[in-house]
Each structure stands twice: as C-alpha cells, then as structure tokens.
Length: 330
Image 1 (cartoon, helix red, strand yellow):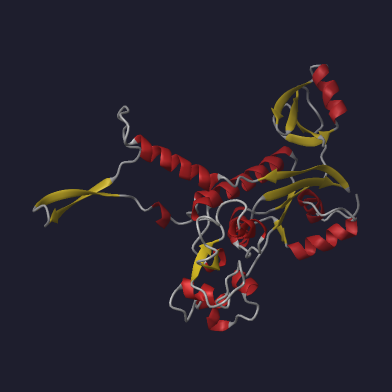
Image 2: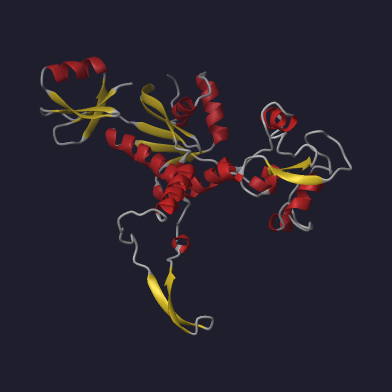
C-alpha cells in the first residue's frame, strides 16, 4: 500500500512509495498527518502534478472492499469489517439503565424535554399530567441504529479515501434483491401482498404446514407439535416464519436442550433455514447510495464477476473493488 500525500496547503497529491515517504520524514521535508491510513503532508511547494484516479467500493452487509487504481496500477486495496454488535450493545445499555433506577444513586436530570398533556382520569377522579414521548421513528429517513451504524461507517470510509486522492472518480457496487422472489420463485402479481402465512390462522400453523406436520428433529409424524426459534429472541432472532421450526414435545424438552442430548446436537449440526437480513440491508443502502453519491458510477455483481475473472484474481471483497474500477490490466 502506498503512502498518501498532501501538499503544504492541505490538498491531496498522488501517493508515493513508503521508502520515499521515509526519506522525506527523515529530512524533515514532511510531517505525519494521519496513521490510519498513513498520510504525510509536505513542508515545501510542489508542481501539483496528478493523474486520473479511480476509487471503488464493494458494499456489503458485513464487509466493504475498497480500492484505488490509476493507469493500470493499484494504489491501495483493503477491507473494512462493519460492526455487528450494535443491537446487543444497545440491549446491554438499556438493561444497565433499568437496573440503575432501583439503586440509590445521585439524581440525574432528564436527557430530553418531553411534552406533557393534561387529561381527566375517571379512576382517580382528578386531572393528571401524561408525558408524551416523541416519536423518533416517524422522522423521515429514520433507520434502526444497527443499520444506520453500518451505513454511516461505509460512507465514512468512502469519503475518507476520496479525500486522500486528487479528483477521484467514484465507482460503487450495489445489490438489488427481491426477497419474496428468493423465497418463492413462482410468486407473481397480488401474491406479493399476501405473504407466506396468507390463508393460515397464524404463523404457527403455517410453519406446521410448511414442515408437513413432521418433527424436524426425530422426523416422526402424529405427535404433539410445537414451534421452536432457530435463533433465540435474546440473540436477535425474530418471530418470522423463517426463524421457526417444527419440533415435537418429546424432543423439545429442558433436558434435550443441554449439551450431549438429541435437541442440542440437532441445533448444532441440523439444517438451518436461510435468513434475509443481509439482502434487506443491501436494498436499503442502495437507495442511500443513490441519494448521497449521484455522480458515482453504479455497477452490479454480475458485471463485477466478469471483470474479476478477466483480471484472473481471486474472489475477495478488495479484489472485487479493484475490478469495479474498470482497470484493464494489472
């Protein structure tokens, strides 16, 4: 990876080799501006010669590949790992705050100023005040913190590398997924509005019918059936049908949940149903990319695969980012 360079006025120049940056720092002709990524700033004037530079990003729900190229040369390439623990951290913080209310601690002023509304309570036979909590989720563009964190982190690194290179052309890969088409390839028309459990009493009976009223652990019929969460709700699992499985009362016991028993072994090695959280995230970030980077060149995975195979490089996020730039040879 090359070293990014700023001129003495703070404008970005073409990056240099680490050996040259080491000599400039040793001769006191440059100073260190940043360590992540490593960037120096010159102390003397330069001509400001630049080349055509391309910056690309292979966006994803867990990893983001970023690369920069210029005249068939790779200036940098790397991979950013997005945080996946935002939801669990918020849950832990909420638990700690609730526990703190029952301890004798110092008084803390409210963080938000809530509005109050007076109404007549017939039960207490008097006028009382009710606190109105602002509806944050009704704001336009609001997203859950777990999704907003990953989107902000993705945009931060894209903007970071674009600011380190002179006049870069931005290339971004996005994904567009039809989740219902992935679950049912034959779906069409009004079926998009009906959902999986349409025509059933509730989701529980739909799961029974989907599994043919067979216990997925012992594979036996004609038993008392229950629904079980594949990913527990305490670990971020949902109550959707794709997170439920059919089990019988003989297999779904407290004893079988312990290590070494039939249900524990099946949960560790059994068949897991597909989840579509990442596809939903890719549909969300695609719209945000269109709004934030209207001048960027947008590509899709089908185009990137052909370019990467033509360059004869391995399948990684940062190699995909290299192929997105449209480089003809390395």
